[in-house]
Amino acid sequence: MSTVSPSSQLVQVVPDNKNNTGDSSDKVKYEDLVLNPDIFLEHLRALLGMLGNPLKVPTVGGSSLDLHRLFVEVTSRGGIAKVIKDRRWREVIGAFNFPNTITSASFVLRRYYFKFLFQMEHVYYLDQSVSTMKSAEEAMHSLSLNLEEGGADEPGIGSVVNGVIDAKFEGGYLVTMKVGSKVMKGVLYHGVKRPSQQPQQTMGTPPSGMALASQRRAKKKARGAAEVDSQKPKCHRSGYNFFFAEQYARLKPEYHGKERFITKMIGRMWGDLSESEKQVYQDKGVKDVERYRTEMMEYKSAHEAGASASAAAATVAQ
Image 1: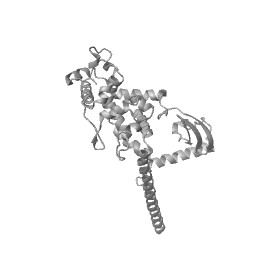
Image 2: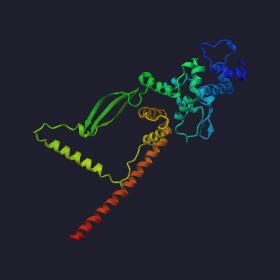
Image 3: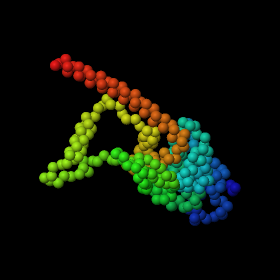
Image 4: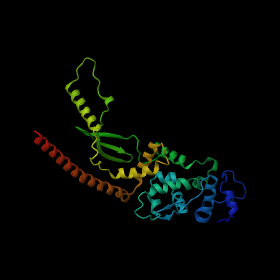
């Protein structure tokens, strides 16, 4: 491997690799960065400094993240786009031996890669010009769109899928659908119609019995919505609900106003989790079901006791 002085390293960090002149033996190559962590960090600091993004080594699980190792693990698998497309983040995560308490390692590493290492991959691994680099946010957005348009094996949230209705019941349908490379079975429930979607009656024509019953149910539901019982326990949440809320709180400040993009990103993150990582959130869901069941029993008991007391008072008053 050729040796390069620190001063020349800083000059060559921002080369237009297509137009770099001089002895090619003095040019720092991708292989040099892989073999020498010190040269890697020197070039990384200089490149980020030129872009106005000073390097602050992040901490994951109480320890400093080895950015050199992350760069090598991702680029040795073909780069960030290929790792995401081939769903190989678990392999990358496995190289770090993170504790089991870190349940969002996939999201954390991907975020830091785009923030600190995507430009290094562009210049040194892909051998592209600095002038053609995208910002981290642009790269993430562009990559997400490209995968949705046909690069990914599994579709994201909002993708169109085809299915077959296997059976029909009062509330909906039993269906079989092909999602990416998987055949899945599930249930589709009828949505509740909004007032504007209710069938309109012709002027002068009295509503049918079914229409009247439907109107009464709609009015009853509207009254129930208006009279929300503040004492009633909140409905239980699933494991995915807990995961979504956690990641949404993290992403919202960074991607303010991009709700759809955030939703899709969280869906991909959930899909990238291993079964053991998902189990952490599923356990929270199970506990929340128990919480809801217990609180509902207490609520119903109190409600029945209150109703009995009211009835007794009415009897005495008579």
